[in-house]
Every structure is written in structure tokens, then in C-alpha cells.
Amino acid sequence: MKPYEIKNMIIDVELDGEEFVTIDFTYQNKDYSITFKKADLEIINTWLFKDGTSLPANLSDNIIGLIREDVKKRI
Image 1 (cartoon, one colour):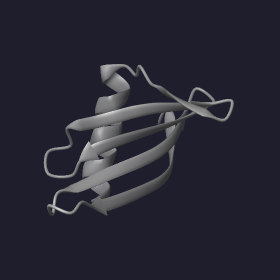
Image 2: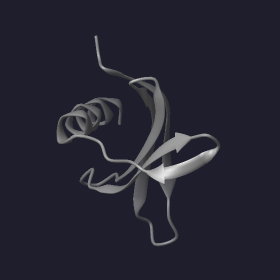
Image 3: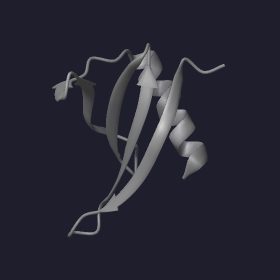
Image 4: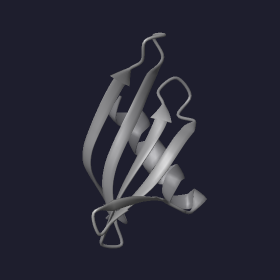
């Protein structure tokens, strides 16, 4: 079983044609969001949602790698 659960995945297209993938997921009973560039899955930003606010998230390379692999399979 995966240590996280993906709740939502959105692929956005910017004005210059660059695509981004935003993943909303739960990990250790907390809600997070990661945005990747779709082309190479480079991280653009990571957020932790807590008490109605968003804070920059500090996720391990291991969790980010697992999510990145999951995203590759889904897109």
C-alpha cells in the first residue's frame, strides 16, 4: 500500500503552451499539493494545507519520487 493517497490531478496549460501537473494528495493525515512541469516532472512548488492556509511543504525525496512515478503512469 502506498504511504499517500492522490485525491486529484489537474493538467494545466499556460499561455506559452507549457503544461503543468498539479497533484493534491494526503500523506500522514495531512493535505498537500505538488505542481510539476509536465515535460520533465520538475517540481515547481509544494504546499501543505493546514488550518485554512497554505504553507511551503518540506517533503522527503523518497515521497516525491514515489509520487513522480505514480504521475508518470497516470499521464
